Amino acid sequence: MINFYMTFSPENKDLADLVSRTLGSKMNGIAAFFGLDGIDHCQKIIIYSTAEEYKAHAQQFTEYYSWMIGDTYDGNINLLSLLRCREAQGHENMTEEDYIKLILHEFTHICQQQINPSADGVIWFWEALAQNLSGQTNEDIEITCSPKELSEDYINLFGNYAISCKLGRYMLHNLPHERIMEYVRYPEKLTADLPNIISEAQKTERTARK
Image (cartoon, rainbow, N blue to C red; front, top):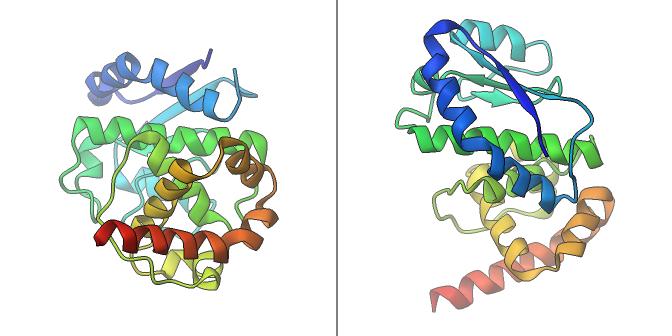
């Protein structure tokens, strides 16, 4: 059973109530994908009321970008409130359902961190699993990037989240679960197999478009 608690300001109480009502079973399902029946610490979800508060938090760990609305840098799920998410670049139309999926996205990262905390060279894979296991979708995009671009310059890659979402969907539909978990545990194996994964995903894509 996955346990978590929340910290939030009074104006976000209704949002926190929504989160509490809808997360439990979905979190357990994602944890089960990773073979986890619990996590190393009691999960905390922190909802920030202002972009300034969230930015100050995020800048302790990384460069801040205007599209950033959630993270797990400190082992907690840190989020802007839904209202403030709608003010962030690219998230203007976020719904309550989208917000729940955002939390599940971040929770997927928490689970992956339990197995291997390093995302070096495989950020795209972390995002691929987080988007697909949370139920998020992205725009359709042709996969034209090289393995090197995906592994070494993901943050600057055009359409990066859409590409990783599509690759993740291909992997989840076509690779054994054991292989995916091997990639979670041993990222170097994923990096070695990445050229073939991209090639096979492109073939599948071309077949689907005929």
